[in-house]
Image (tube, rainbow, N blue to C red; front, side, top):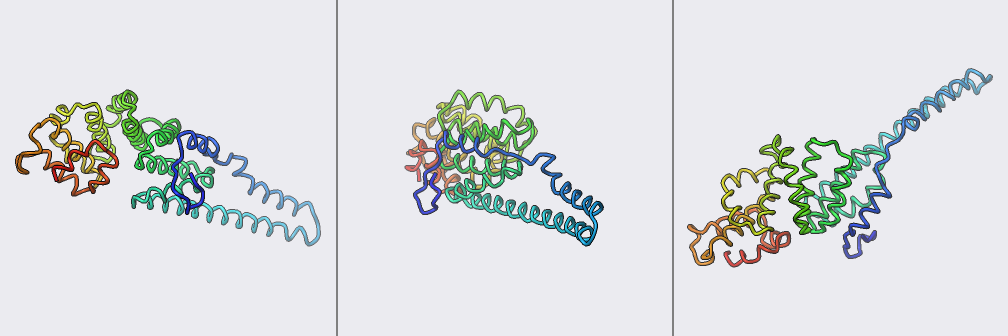
Length: 292
């Protein structure tokens, strides 16, 4: 991935991302490193008692100034890194994924001492890679996070769902199926949340990628409500359901709008997301453009 923002965007390969994560792991300070400023201040105070003259009166003030200065520097550094990570996440939320990738790539080496910010940055980079269609590289990031996160936590389940969806995008169907089956239980406590909605979308994607269109149609009841927590990204699910109806109804192209579920679902999808955006993620939706 080019370091110069003016260079053409080249997303990292899975190998490059894996190497980058290995070179910049989360590395929080040790207990001794955290105590070092206080130990230095203590040494200065002790010296003030064992030395005589004017120096003994100055050393306690030096210790106090040292502690205040060091604490202030660490606080400002922490705030600066938090702001940097938040701005990067906001860039991704605005769907400027290339820009967010560059920012996150630069931020990661800086946030290694803070595991929380490090994890957020890795998750953001992985999400951008996923959205840009770099599924294999995204899986590297998701696997890295899943190896460190505690099982059963909302963020862990969400990352697991994202990883299963990325496996579908990478055509690793067996891998994706294992992930979806394994997540069925952990997802249940998160009904009507973005986690359950993302899981529902992953299941629908699996049905489309394995050509189980009739199964998708049979399970369409309640889909709108199930996908609603995704916001505009629910449009992907609406489009996939349109494709399921399209392939199960041989006369979909000839029927009128009122009696054509494929057209209805496709219209709902394009109200949420532009056709180009839908096709970029799911090229198999191309036949539906004829229904517009």
